Length: 236
Image (cartoon, rainbow, N blue to C red; front, side):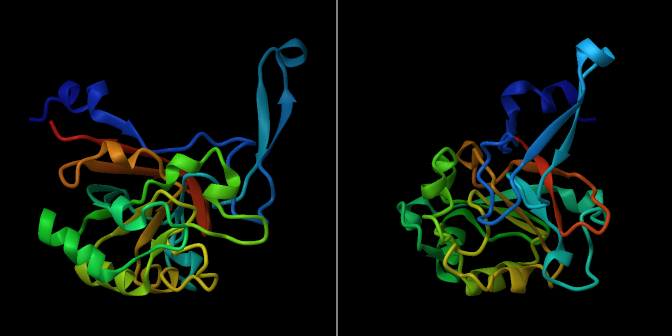
């Protein structure tokens, strides 16, 4: 039997989630986050708000239906697809702060030669280091009127589908590079049934292999995606 206390020791738990609020950088053109107080202590004896938030806000999940008609929505993903061994692809040297960088299949294969093959059933998390800029909208998302951040080239997306992974996460606004406005990587991975995690933070705290990732999106019915709490459990 697994020792639950050891498994869930604080030093083994990593939160990969941005706080979600008015300062969270959203995709350009998104309706701003809003929270309206509908109950307060002085009047009602308690506190509650109503939220208005895009499905793809902050740290969030893309469901396959986001780019594949009649595919699985945010509420339809099984728990077995959301608790997965994590493979971290550290491409910080490849990106080197370049907002136009594309991670290619050759980059992934070079990491595999060093760390071992990407196994089927894994969740692949792409560490670009871009979460360092979450407090700087023009750096994190790109200058006004454009999007600029690193992402996956189409051949890398195709390779990960071929490897049989269940999902792909990244510490930028999206798995496609910001300049790829037609979302070519999305059009490879989501129709293949993968989910995405976008807007992750803290991937540098995870090893290349051995951690588990727990993805907890809001199960929005017919949702193209949903804000998510994403946690990792580090190996002992």
